[in-house]
Image (cartoon, rainbow, N blue to C red; front, side, top):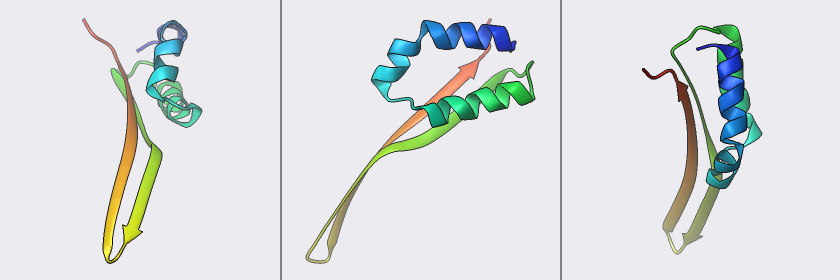
Length: 75
């Protein structure tokens, strides 16, 4: 995938990405991957954006919100 096309798509979907919870770290992972290999077919970044843990009386409840961003070339 070409770097220019990636940048165009990131600008176009910036609002949607923000609403989903994609942070700068995930965008940086994908951008670095595309910078290293500009003609790659796909690039992915993943991060846990929120984590909740509750412990009580020998029990634990844990919830995680994971955001995964995949940019790939489609036909």
